[in-house]
Image (tube, rainbow, N blue to C red):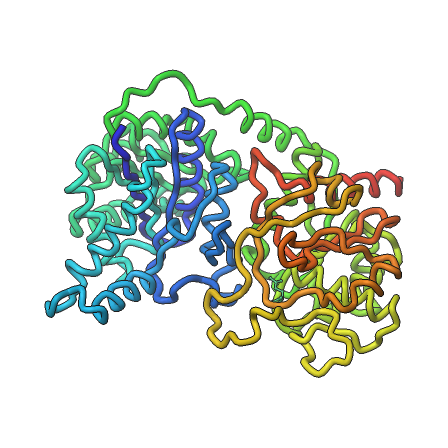
Amino acid sequence: METKYIFVTGGVVSSLGKGIISSSLACLLKARGYRVTIQKFDPYINIDPGTLNPYEHGECYVTVDGHEADLDLGHYERFTNVRTTRANNVTTGRIYQSVINKERHGDYLGRTVQIVPHITDEIKRCVKALGHTGEYDYIITEIGGVVGDIESLPFLEAVRQLRWDLGQDSLCIHLTYVPYIAAAKELKTKPTQHSVKQLQELGIQPDVLVLRTEHPVTEEVRRKIALFCNVAPDAVIQSQDVPSIYEVPLTMHAQHLDEIVLRKTGITPEGEPHMAPWMNFVEKMRGASEVVTIGLVGKYVELQDAYKSINEALFHAATYADHKLEIKYIHSEKLDESNAGALLGDLDGVIIAPGFGQRGVEGKFVALKWAREHDIPTFGICLGMQCMVIEFARDVLGLADANSTEMNPATAHNVIDLMEEQKGIADMGGTMRLGAYDCALRPGSLAAGAYGKELVSERHRHRFEFNEAYRGRFEEAGMQCVGENPRTHLVEVVEIPGKRWYLGTQYHPEYSSTVLEPNPLFISFVNAAIAYKESKK
Ligand code: GLN
């Protein structure tokens, strides 16, 4: 079949859950046997979110091919089990960079370079790039931002042109917000009407409207919106708040979103999507009553999205273990010897978060020492693993000033040091060790047992590494380097055998955890936390 393009836009306000609706639709189409991918176009000027701090943009997600991406790509992978790449996330900055490079190269043959057609052509080229691989039946393109933003205009103009070119092979889904005015006890449709008008002024007629609402949309409201917006009443779909994002594919299917999309793109829907594995997960999620409590020690704990993939990977693991997940966020800057027992004492397991820079690091050492001495299941990720190494060096090896050269370039014991290949790098963007690398695991180790194999591939985002010169001393004292890159021998996993579960990874296993394929290390860690909880009873 011809590749079909679905555009997802948003109006009225941001944070309507375009990423979740796109992911849910992709999940349903995939469950019907179609080959689907999702891409996101972000209207900001940064080349990618890699240089944005978490206060600006939440977590930075990393793809297997080493692209620092918008966190929505994490949802896309978790809902579809389809790996994304650099081609799945494009920003205004990248579009302009590529047009300006072409201009400098002389590709425009002396013509004036303009937003239309040059920028819009480049956007169209990027939209279609995944389609040209021949690997997908449906390509869902989420346009970041809100209709009416100055930044979004070139993207929407490109969508208008593409819809004209593609005809029935394309479709536009527009998300809006339907506010409830408590004093009037009424849902209000006017913001939706205005937002659709704005889209129509740009030459785009939406085919499907998804209304985000806190209260059920009545038949009357649905008909009114359909009438004012030139959309069929059955294509006005409500997205009412649900307890978990993983319920959304089911609520969308109950309103036939997948069938509507198929029909409108010229395909007759047959049968039902194969959602049994997804339902199994959702039923476990709904049925869980016992709680497992995991502490997350980091410096961005007040931000909802800063540790998104870790939260979700923990949630997948807890759900498969038939437990409800409770995450206790512990601010690493507020943790010290005087309150460690009070903050960590009730936990069933503790995660030491990734991060950059000195701020909050001392609190991570305190948490690690407490967790190690009290034998609580402990999982260090990236900077968390580096802190495990430093804390062990200080407390067990007796190297009092052991540190990472990231925190103290003058330390006498640089147990964590800048990678050789990083030494000449000056540019900050896209220059870390990024993406998936192989890791060979020692037979019989906790890590190899968890994965059930001895060669894995996981994603990275770091500049510093375990200093090979200290390896022997760590191993003699009980911290084993059980995972390493088979080519460079860079240490990727450390653990302390004999502890309940004490393991750190230089890589980020959370990025690869999906609903249908939860990450084995998170499964193993959460199971250890549950066993520890049981042992305390
Ligand atoms: N700051 C550390 C490094 O660059 C760890 C990075 C991380 O936790 N993602 O190596």
